[in-house]
Amino acid sequence: MADGAADLTALAERLQAVCLERGLTVATAESCTGGLVASTLTDIPGSSGYVLGGVVAYADRIKTAELDVVQELIADHGAVSPHVARAMALGARSRFGASLAVAVTGVAGPGGGTPAKPVGLTYLAVAGPSGVEARRIMGSGSRAENKASSVQAALELLLAAAEAAGP
Image (cartoon, rainbow, N blue to C red; front, side):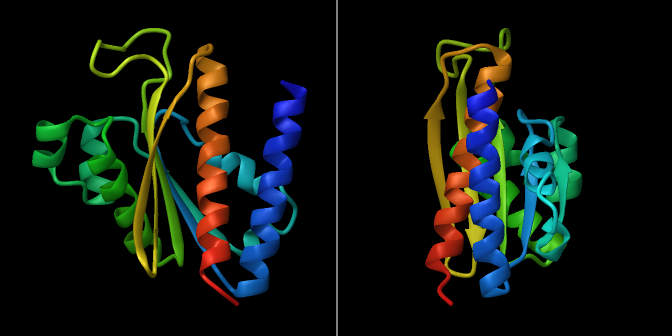
């Protein structure tokens, strides 16, 4: 895990450099990662220059109350869906007034999976000035490993969005 932590730190440092250089701000909306994306970002000294804040929306009622995710969206597609990930990212971007917002929702495990939504399934989304991009990933490890792979994917998606935002 030490190598994984180093990789996450390197990604967070790269993201910070790009965001500070381009004047971008970031917010987070997390479910299955329980705040690990925000924690990883804020582990880097100077992160207060671009990280605005985040919401850990583990319960569906928090997704609706704090991130303006429409209850019908959750009822129709489930909390672990690209639809809800997009809505969470848009809600965080709006709530915090951020340039970019990342959202993560998934099944970290070891329980909670179903045949349709197995343990390790995670949806991520980044909302920015040019719209929202969602991604599906599938972890196959322990709860901690699934959470770490979700954080890595979230940082990679954020970095790509920050780099695409231009100077």
